[in-house]
Amino acid sequence: MRKRFLGSIAALAAGASAAWGQSPMPVTPAGGAPAAIARAGDIIPVQGPAPVVMPPIAVGPPGDPQGLGPTAGLGPPPGPMYPNPGPYTAPMYQPPPPSGYGAASTVWFTGEYFIGFGTSEHVGFPLLTSGSPGQKGIIGMPTTTTLIGGGNINLGGISGFRLGGGFFGDADRRFGFDFSSFYAQPTEYSKTFDANSGNAGPDQIAGVVSQFGATAGAGIPVLARPFIDTTTGASTSLVVVSPDIPGAIPGTSSLSVGRASVSVRSSLWSADPSAIFNVFRSDPTRRLMLSFDALAGYKYLQFDEEFVMSSHTLLRGLTPVETFSTGPFGVPVSNGITLTPTPVGVGGVTTRSPSSLDIADRFVTTNKFNGGNLGFKAEARYGMFTFSTRAMVGIGQMHETLRIRGVTSFQNTDNGRSGFAYGGLYANASNIGTYTNDEFCIIPDLNATVGINLTKSLSMYVGYNVIYISKSIRPGNQLNPVIDASTVPFSQTYGAAGSIPGVMKPMIQQEYWLQGASFGFAFKY
Image 1: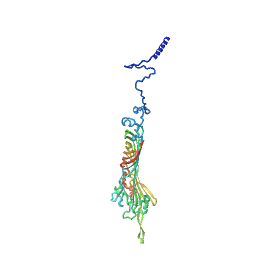
Image 2: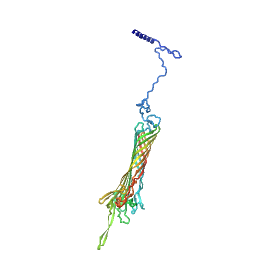
Image 3: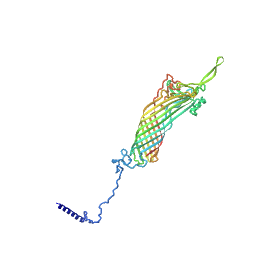
Image 4: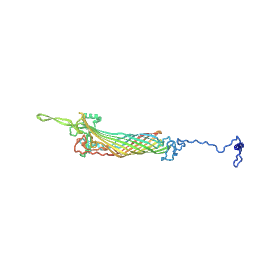
C-alpha cells in the first residue's frame, strides 16, 4: 500500500517537470494569423486604455466626511445657511458666509438721541386771573383777565434717548433675544407772575426781593385765584395781591406784594424685552438684502407728571384807629389817626403784619403699564444704505395713581410766630389723599430709520419715533374748581358751619402722544 502511494507522488513530479520545459503555445486571434511566439526577454504590449489616477475624496466637517450636510442627517452644517432651510426659501444650499454688508448679525447694539413733542397739559379752568381791585379777578367780571389756565399748557421740546440690543443664539441665526428701552428726560414748564399793588413801602419790597429776586418789586397790581363756591354756586376768588380799595386810607391794604406761579413736570420711560425669531432672510450675496423678524415679549412703561400751583403774599394790613384826648371842659379832642397791624386769619389762628403767607396745591399722577408686547422688526439693505423699522403693540393694564396734597403756612417776621394747616385752594379737605384706578390700555410704539453703513459693523442713521398711550391720567384734568370755601385755610369763612362740602372729582382719562426725530448709531457683529 505504502509503495503504491509513493509511486503516485513520483509520477506527478515528473509530469510537472515536463510541463515547465515545453515552449508556450502561440495565441491566434479570431479570423487572423497566428501571433508570434513570445520568447524569454520579449516585451509584451498592454492591451486597453492607460491607467488613470483617481482624485482624492472631498472630506467634509467632522461627522459628515462626504460634505452632504444636514439633508443626509449626518450632523450639523459647517456654518450659517443662506437662505435657511424650512419655511425660508428653496432650494437649500450652503455657500460660505459672505463678507459684505449683507451678512446676518449675531450680536447688535443701537443707541440714539431723541427730540420731540408730547400732548399738551390740559387745564380747563382759569387758575390765575387779574383785574380791577373792586372785581377781585372773579371769572365773568368785565375787567377780569385770565393769566394762566382755561386751555392747554405746552411743555415744549422733550429730549430723550433710545437704547437697544440683542443676539441670535443658534448657528443659523434664527432664534434669539432682543431688548429696547426708551427714556424721555423730565421736562418742566414753569411760569411766575409778580405783583405789586403800588402801595408797598421800601421795607416790604426789600423783603420780597430777598425771597424772590430782583424783579419782585414790580408787577401787575392784582393777582387772584378763582374758584366756584359750593355754598352759593357763584364764581369767587382767593385774592393773592391787591392794592388799596378806592376811597380807603392809603396804605391800609393787607395784600400789597406777592407772587404766584404754576409749574408742570413730566417724564416717561419704557423697557421692552422680547424673544426674536427670524421669519425671512434673503440671500446676502445679492445687492438688495431683506430681513424680517417677529418679536414677542413683555412691556413696562411709566408715565409720571406733577402739577404745582403756589402763591406767596406779604401781609401789610394796617387798621386806622382815631385817637382822642380830653380837652377843656371835658370835651374830647382828636389827636389824629394811628395805624395798627390788621389781624388776618390763617387756618383758625390769626397773624399780623409783617407776615408772609404761602399757599400750595400739588397734584401728582403716576401711570404704570404692564402687559404683553407683540410686533416685528424689518430691515432692507442696498449696498451701503440701510432702512429699518421696528413696530410693537403693548396690550395690558394701566395702573393709575393720583396723589393730592395741599398746605397753607405763615410766618410773622416781627415776632417769629409761624404755623401751617393742611389744605390749599384746589387741594382741600374734599380731595386730599391718594387714589388708584386700573384701565385696559394699548400702547403702540413705532421706530423707523434710514442710515448709511460706515463699516461692515458700524452704521449711522436718522429716524422717526412715535409712542401712543390710549389711556392715562394727567394732573391738569384732576383739578376741581368747585370748592367749599370753609375748607380753605386762608378764607374768611374757614371752618364756618352750614357749608356744602365739595365732591371728589372722578379721574378723567386722556390719550397721550409723544413723537419726534432721532439720530443714532448701530453696531452689528
